[in-house]
Amino acid sequence: MSEKRKVLAVDDNVSNNEIVEEILSDDYELKIATSGEQAMEILKDFKPEVILLDIMMPGLDGYETCLKIREIPEMKNVAIIMVSAKGMASDMYKGHEVGAYDYITKPFSQEQLLESIEFFVEQKAGSDKY
Image (cartoon, rainbow, N blue to C red):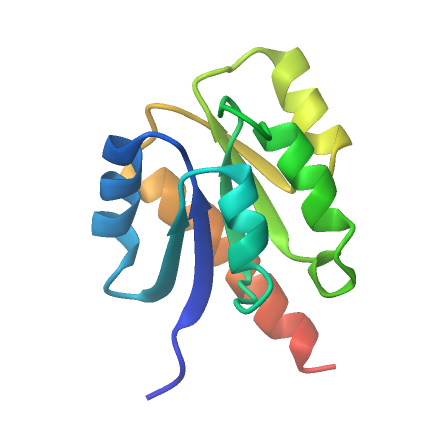
């Protein structure tokens, strides 16, 4: 059996983390951070293919966390998916501007989350062949 793909979920809301864990834990190696600062610590030893990143968090918000992640050389091309209740076009634009690959608004469906993650995991798997 192949190794599970790695996902880091970053959200200060415990309920949101429980939902993500229920959706992903069977098929992915999942780590959860409840703050941007904690995510940065986890990334010292954990190299995910995909990062799910909430925007509205105390301390480092999602935008700041995304910028900091992009400063890590081996994380320059990791797929960062912003997950937020903020659904305005300007919020999405800002997410892409700081380095997010995709933007999902809450509440999201299981299918929506899985499709986005699987798209980037498959894309990475394809690029690893060359």
